Image (tube, rainbow, N blue to C red; front, side):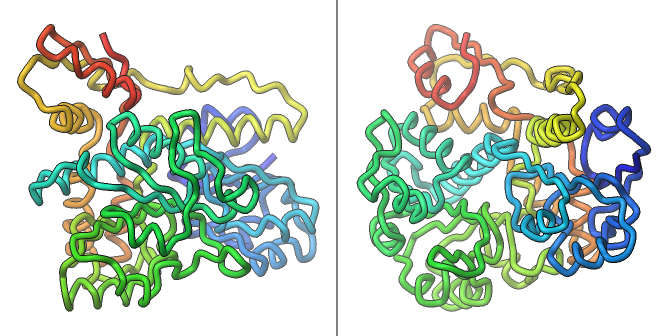
Length: 393
């Protein structure tokens, strides 16, 4: 069996090597010809497998039987086209959700530190309450932050008055109400191009113009959900809002002018923790084993390395947000990725630099891998840090 795998998929040898001949290719080079000559293809989000690619791959004699993406999102794969040709499919829902939440909190706490405000004093609106949005909502609640949510598909299914969880979260609101009511807006939506819940340019010129001065707009969902030109014009003109972008229109050839205007600019790496990547690889491995009727002998725990910073000791004298900021930076500091995108894109050119940041991404773990010892003067921090997912001693 011939298995083509994106070269950036970690633990590919361990997960797929025993199942067949492994062929590693850069994600952007996995095309119709690569699909046609493979029995199994395993990709990440930069590989587009749309209807035209699928139809071209399946024309004539094709070996393709199964496609897996080691990502939460599936908008880069036309699953209906695969099903029409009888090709199996699997994704990795929730695999990197914790990493994305770490990214959001690291970004917001960094921005608060730079600009001199407290995150706990802001009202946060979450647009898209799926695997990522729900986890973010719970962590913000642990910080005592007022949080509002917008998710039209969930509101339609569960009822607009449905509560988020047992923590007494506010019911789902419409997007324009969220814009009016919130100081921080976090986007975690999939890309839906048409239909009643389309998300392409969800934040269009009109909505971006309505943002109140001082608003923070953070997008860690899909780049096309924000009108990049309209955002650039708002930042260039009034310059009275702040933006954090991990996802962009036209990746990897993103708008350099917009990159220079946002407060934090990163190359689509919000979910790039080692834990999330390995979780994604293992989920697709397990799905492929099920498809082939084979037992999944490999466990996720056997793939995970020991954390480089396993333990942190805190004593008295730290404000809660400062303590959380220090814990986050022990495992992940968003400033590193911001600086990396600027450096690599200027040295190599935008597209090559963007991809280089992703291909050469350094080891990153999740906050849940950190054990925090609280000395007597810091024990009041226990509920906050436990709510964030840390192991507290």
